[in-house]
Image (cartoon, rainbow, N blue to C red; front, side, top):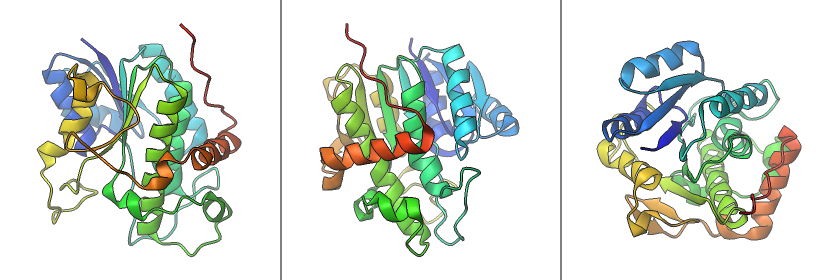
Length: 261
């Protein structure tokens, strides 16, 4: 039995993955952005161990969330599922004066990765839209570009693939991978989505617990259990390091060096 933490598991793909893992007999810890959402998650996923709360748009709350997780862990796997998509809405700024889409989709996974202890498998939910992402952090952090919600989402999902690949490179004893679940009919994806919702959760569950050879890899980008080629910038070490440096400056938290065995 594995202990698994899933962010953004009050609904959608995170909730579906949690239900699957509980049904397989695993020890699942849920997450909601506040106490009400955490309670919703527990109602929606009977058999889950516990639900923790924290707003991933806030650096302070994300740090506190990592502390809560560490008090329950260690985890064999963490699924970084939480995300926002605001294509037709104005730019939202966080309490830390950052773009909310970047803060939740990319910076929070960095911070949780750095602060949650001992996870052996890390799964980061990205999107096929990451291929339209711009890897240049300068305009994002300086807010130089006119706001475009679709572009902001694509950028954030490129950064999260970049994070998965950087962790795979820097932590060779950890299996770190990114997943495109497809365009699925969740609240985020909308009713016109063309991919299968059930299949959208398969890959992250498989990567979290399977001992099949295909799941025992690191530094890959998957769609429906098949490795695909991501945006070239995701594998560029200089760009990866620039992203990690920016996250460190914003949070004051450094990605730890791997523990030598």
